[in-house]
Image 1 (tube, one colour):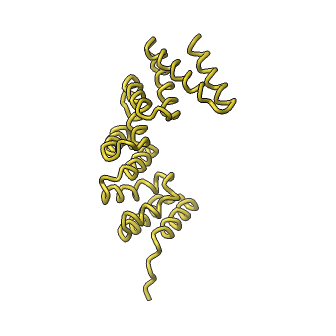
Image 2: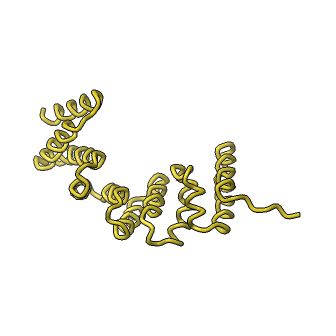
Image 3: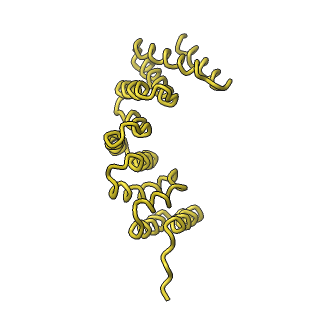
Length: 194
């Protein structure tokens, strides 16, 4: 008697458990490929959700999901993140992020990946400025803007970038909710002002 195929969620969970036990990437990919061939995009998305932060799992599964749902911005962002974490590089990740933005301009994750993949520091600062302007309450975007501007100011002795960094750190300081956040931001401002 032939065994019934496992539910996609259970099959992926078992594949991940074995991968964690023996670190056999080839076996993981083989098992994921089997699930990908037998499950629909919605089933795959639900099945991989608990493991989407594991790039070796999310990458292959979300490649299939994006192939089947090419306008799914969330799926593209998850795939782009998996690619970034496995070192696929800014070109591939940036292209996916741009496609995700085109599919859903309100997807902050897509904008973050797009800004992160800018090839040169000055362009990264400009991109983070766009993200921060689009999502003014996004403290992570502001922190990335401030950090990238501070780095650019230091590397290029750029007074405009220095002003952007200081102004942005001040905004973050005004929003800080914890003492460690305030102390870190005050230290950054002191270092930049000196």
